[in-house]
Each structure stands twice: as structure tokens, then as C-alpha cells.
Length: 117
Figure (cartoon, rainbow, N blue to C red):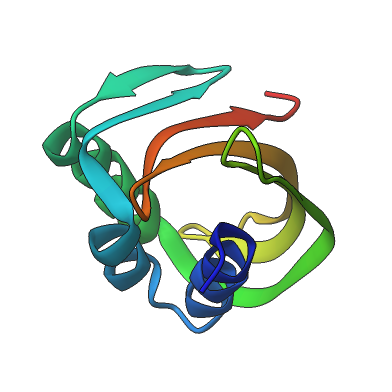
């Protein structure tokens, strides 16, 4: 399975409420995740952040992949996504972001998210 196909599968799992399962299967122990709100290093720190995110979501309504592409030579996948969700407390939002994933040996070692904070 190509990295592009793996990313599609990850986001299909996210859309089914299986974000943590996708994370465990596809992210390296030395993962670095970056976004406008900060940087996390290591699988444990990144997992805790993802768990906090999931614990704050009341309902996940939809996920749409707007665009996806792969640079085979550099083992990078680029994906633009829109997610419609309701946070606990009733705040419903559409989150739009672009993620750039660096893959090595079948796992993501670096992921950077771009969005308006």
C-alpha cells in the first residue's frame, strides 16, 4: 500500500471515530507533530494530545478530503481536509486544515498542520 493510500485509510478511520487506532498503527515512536498552537515530540506526547482532542469532541458529523497528493521521491503526502464536529458544550465548527506528512519505512515521522488558529 502506498503512503498516499495509507493516508486515505487514516482519514477514513478518523471519519469512523477511530483516530487513536489510526494513530497507533501509522505513527513512528519518534514522531514530531507541528501546528500553529505548538510542537510535540515523541509518540507518547502526541498520543496524549490526540486523546485530549477526542475527549473534547461531543459529535463528529463529517470529514471531507478536499485534495490529496504525494511526492514519491520525498515520501511526503499532502492532504486538505474539512471536518464538521461539535465540541462538548455545543460549539459546532467546521475545521479546515492542510497536513504535510513525512513518511519513512511505512510510518509517519513528521506531520505539520496548517490552519487558521
